Image 1: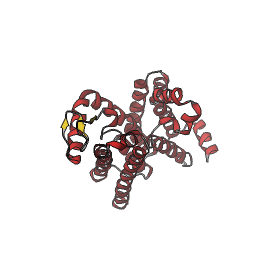
Image 2: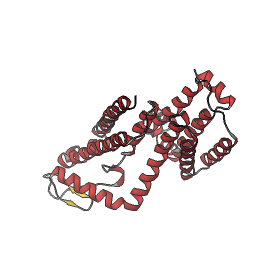
Image 3: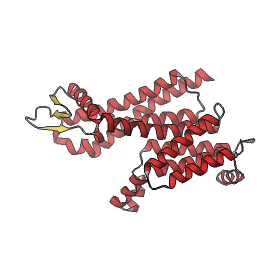
Image 4: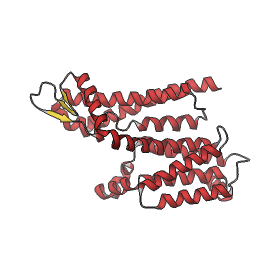
Length: 282
């Protein structure tokens, strides 16, 4: 299958090239983070940890690869056009600029091109939706956190304080029965952190199953993000209740278990939505 993939790629099938360049752009979008992980942990340890890339992004990259490879086994695949070549060249150029925002622009632009020029449920359109989820979730998260970051963590702290039954001041949450001690909820550890992973999982799964996006299916994306938010909020509530285990819950073994739980919750919701949509759209 891999040999056939490269043979078709060489022949100029548009879906193959669009997905390949999309993968390159998406990886380069995280290049600064990857390089930082290598510098901090060393190449061997960074490689063992998949260079710090989250599971949802890796799954989205696999989704792009799978869609392109599946197209390689299809007769009569759409050929590459001159316009495609120009778009691919521009996207590749942007991807190789040592600036993450340029690669982000490449992912979004390529995704929009794929959606605009691909037929309904075609490989190009499905790949484009995944690219838009990769780039769009990153862009929205950055804009939201930079423009409304203080309000987001303040509301998050109020919610966590309500769950834990403790006092809250702005983004500072008191520990339960711990005197004057408290902890701060920052942007990197808030309940909304990594909610975009749910959107990436949803987009990838639905497009691998060739589903059409409709309001009901979109609702499951919202539910998956809400489920991830609630698990993250539960982790912060646990910090308020068990300050003696702060390190483990914040960034240790328990934190990893909560992260895994949030992915499982989101995945179960997405699976339910996918099965429901599969029966509705069959």
